[in-house]
Image 1 (tube, rainbow, N blue to C red):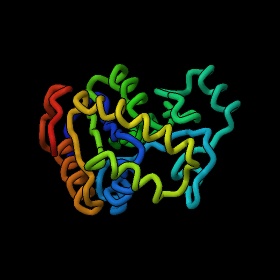
Image 2: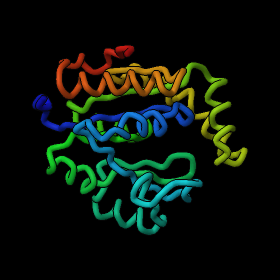
Image 3: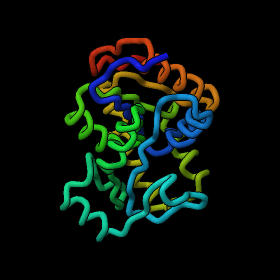
Image 4: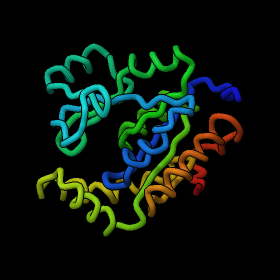
Length: 204
């Protein structure tokens, strides 16, 4: 199969902390048989246990990050929960040059910026089944102090309000099932199905 023509070949996966974006996406891309590459984001937060430089994130100092902002190196960037995150232009462009689709796993602030830059980008919103599940997952993760956790939980209401602005919405009740759903959705996006106008809020 040949990927259908697209001016940007760009997919955004977004959603609140605790939605399971990284876990779901890792399962989908593990086989390596999709013509998609995940863009590795830059962050100024410290690495969490098990995270690897250049694989999960590029871990930069605040000074490095601000220099890159000044030099126009980011497609999008935002301050989230006290740290900065951004998508490097060169990270996306190098995959495009190799004829891959690029998937950005980013927050809703970054997604708004990408939507303005690339109107043809495909927007996918991932969410947990309810608010209690977000808190359970974040506490189980054990990577946040109480203040940081409360900031993330407070932000969830605002982030969920963005869901109707995405082409597709997935509810992550079961990791394996959601990964299978996302894989099928990505296959449809790349090879088969014309997408609905943005804001359609399709449930997949």
